[in-house]
Image (cartoon, rainbow, N blue to C red; front, side, top):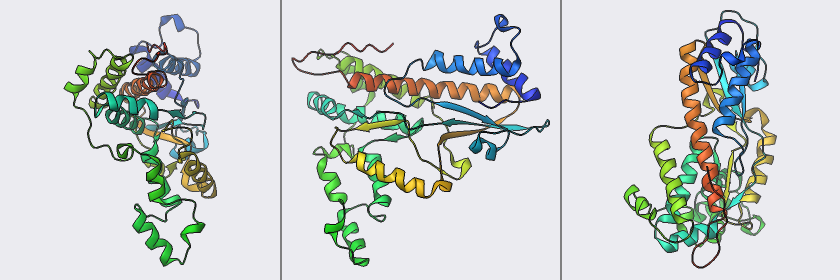
Length: 324
């Protein structure tokens, strides 16, 4: 995090103090270090260790341009700050297909609901790669804007291209996922049906339903991170990668997408979220409240992915991943 200056530092420190992340025990620490310490405590207390989603890096700047370059200026009469979340490309994919199929077989709609909740939480925090979202990316990286096999073949004919020379089209992509709801969920469960799943005796199912309900409550309460639209750039990375299995076509699409983004690097950013924050104690306090809610949703998303990585149904054993 870049160094804030002047009154803004004091306002940020007081907001952290009111929220309980700095205290009298921190007396003697330089104020810029105090703010950084308080923000690290926020991250540590809410997120802790993350296992299945990408780590977050917080960036603060006195200018929007500085946010991109991780620098700040020395203007003493600042009215606002820009705060962003920066991502690397460190998250490993989590293959959830077999588990979701088991859940769907147990109760029609349950697998779909879990996947939709994962995708929604990912989209509202750091962005999400999943078969459905990767398909949207493939539309412009592979299929010239087409969304269906018919549209794609028309585009190829228009440009006198041979379909045999293409890697794959929308039809082939979709055919990999035997369950159509992976791309287009059609039968999600309502909260009452999810509550019934809390009584399910199949190993691990109740824990998944409980975590899904928790995430849905956070989403309904408005937990989210902002987008990066203030930068007029597209996020090149996303913090969540949900695969169907290790052989699905998402890896190839994403590899091509990264190459595509590298060629147009001035149109992309490693930031996944940007806030414009009024440089007052009240402004920072309002930002901090929303940021903490977003962190809670992100942590719960990580926990649900952990449950999906170990739960089985039927007579099979279940891993002992317990989410705190």
